Length: 331
Image (cartoon, rainbow, N blue to C red; front, side, top):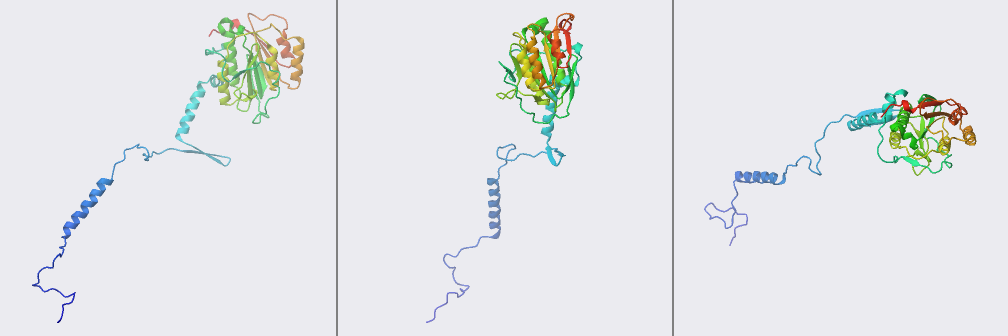
């Protein structure tokens, strides 16, 4: 008995095999495939709003300036240029920068607005100036760098300048004109200094008050750059006239900074420096060699005679200047 093999081909007239699958038409498979692809795109794609955190926003073009100096390259963006413009505008509003651009003549002392309150935060009130005879070395060279500047017509030349101004209560007389005029002249004088020159400001009554943004370090000479002048401007504006007068501590502090030129301004002939005090100043200055100019604020025309301010200037080769405060302009 013979049996048909497994791969025998069924006869045409044989009935269909049980469970035989029918193949789907090709067009139906194509439609299903495209539908699935479109659905996936719609589900997975989501528009990202601009500025959403975590996503990168639109990029904009920017101009960058390149500066090369001594082998070093610096890049400046538009924001840097804008910041520089703002800084320049701020500097133009600074009293010292204004005085440098258009210094006022002596006879037209400009009024200076004084804010309410005490001294500025940069100032330091010193009870005793005797210990401040060692001043830190400058951070940049001033060799050969000299400037000429003046206070009420007394002109000094050098690279290191110290201003010692009286701020006792009598400087508030005549509607505040003496102190206002002293401040205005000081702004103008600082405006003549460059960034390689050094300066320090001392206002005094019974005690000296010195510009010192470096506290708790001892006060020292500052360079005449824009930042230091802005600090000086705020310090000057915060000074008020009050208290009595004691000259010697302020003079010792100033000489301890070893200036080339000192401008010493006061309206107080009483109490005067005694002969022994003048001798002490000359001894201290013998190691410094500073030229001390004396500016005397008085009331009415100058009277004859020689006072301690004449002697203070004379023994250092400086100049004595008398200013009649009644002739100063009103604020």
